Amino acid sequence: MQEILKLKPIFQERIWGGDKLKKHFDYDIPSDHTGECWAISAHRNGDCIIENGALKGMHLSEVYDKYRELFGSAESPVFPLLTKILDASDDLSVQVHPDDEYAMQNEDDLGKTECWYIIDCEENAEMIYGHQAKTREELVGMIDEGKWDALLQRISIKPGDFFYVPSGTIHALCKGTLVLETQQSSDTTYRVYDYDRVDEKGEKRQLHIEEAKKVLSVPHKGSTVEPVTIEEENLTVTKYTSTRFFTVEKWTVNGKADKKLKEFTLVSVLSGQGLVNGLEVKKGDHFILTSACKEAHFEGNLEMIVSWIDRIPC
Image 1 (cartoon, helix red, strand yellow):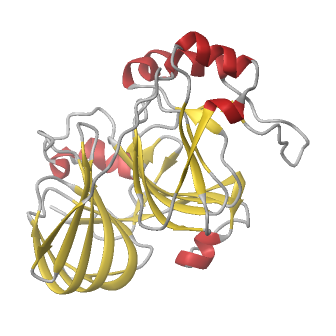
Image 2 (tube, rainbow, N blue to C red):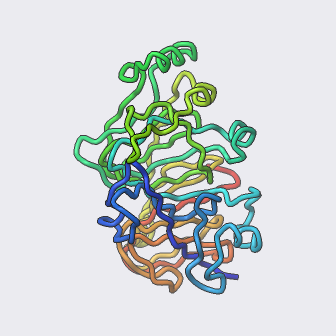
């Protein structure tokens, strides 16, 4: 069985996108308005192709369907996770994502709980995370009256920060931010506010205000992340979050290091280069260590964001 599935990223142009995916990772992007790199995805709106080994040329969704043994204890009918890199050259819309129950009933999609690792951002950058309303009635009233400054909660960010964003959380990445996002495999977004901007055709993007009112959490409950760092031989592990949706850590390798794996594991290389079980990898590469790989052997200097689904989250 194939131990490593290296993925070919898919790029999505967005009204708020830019060219940082080219500048930072040297990706061959379609335009200077490229907002998203779907790095590890089997979603119907962006299904990555395997680039190596016996399964080369197959879509990840096809591999997941035909070779489920590569994905251990995964029970989801669809590949459950999605890794993106987002270039917010301009503010994203103020938005919210539904939970599994609402999304499956109304969108034929998974819900979307996600988290963000801030790769880079401008000085004094910020993001929208949460709201000030105490009741749903107050929330609805402030949305209807367009009291965005009073409603929305803004927080400062810096490179290396990590944020957990449960479904139901109103949020928005803001201008000048480069982010790695780990999320459920979903493409359902309800826009609440889009700054009244227009696209190249002079048209405003669709809003989903009534849907958003139904799925927004009230009152807002912030989810504080307290990273824990563990030093192993030539390997620094920073633990960020572990929930029923995903576990996310950062692994930094200097030299040679070994790491036992609990489940199939998604890996994104943020910087450096080296070998993983003999496969050459470098900054900007994305791959899956399948359940055929019980232990990862690293050589080189690598900074990676990794994720998997624990059967029993810690």
